Image (tube, rainbow, N blue to C red; front, side, top):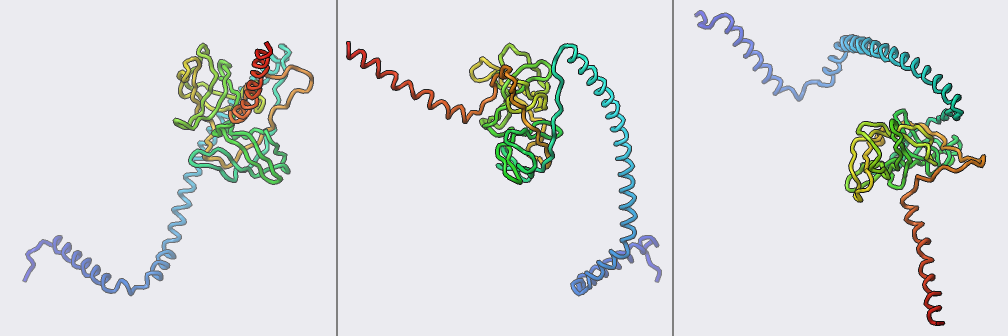
Length: 307
């Protein structure tokens, strides 16, 4: 008896029945199949195809990366030429103005072994110490900018306080206008870096770069620190409170450089003004200053009694 279904539908019914039978068979005997052997056989069969596809993908990615690197290299060469011309012009102008020439910074590469505190790290353990030429007071920087300052040194390791340490203060200036201020980290009411002691009359714009100042006693001049993201008045209403976004990612430190701090003048020249201070040390120093005020009242009372 001929089938009442068209040929295409008959083939579909056969395929569905076949799939249903295979599914039932796998459900019944699936636990007894040598899955590991089948997986190994499949890996052996398809491994050449996987290698071919992976090699092609890597070649295509390398070709794209090569083009991007060539373009970046061309831009860097042009920028390097402009910088060399600007450097020659700068040296000539400083010589005509009888200004001292800029001195290069000696960089010592170190590895950041660990970061303390979470979620905002305040200190880092470094892989180099006294044996590697690291000293207390050296600056810690990355290719992006300033990170912190070395506070403890051992034979083979050292510890650095990061910009997020509330006890660390940095004398900074605005790159374009030269406005000076003290950069400190405030954890409350929200963690942020603030450039303080900036008068209201000074002009600062959002987006301007912040770098270490020549007034700093602890950091060399010209190290990038960050950029201005917000400006408003402080609680007293007499100064500006400038929020700064750090140039370096402090929570993702892996490698950094140690830079020797500025050398103290020994030629008899006038010392630079001490604009940097440590809040904890300032609070501790306030106690002995106020102590002599109490015995000062005793001579007055005795003098009155003598009268």
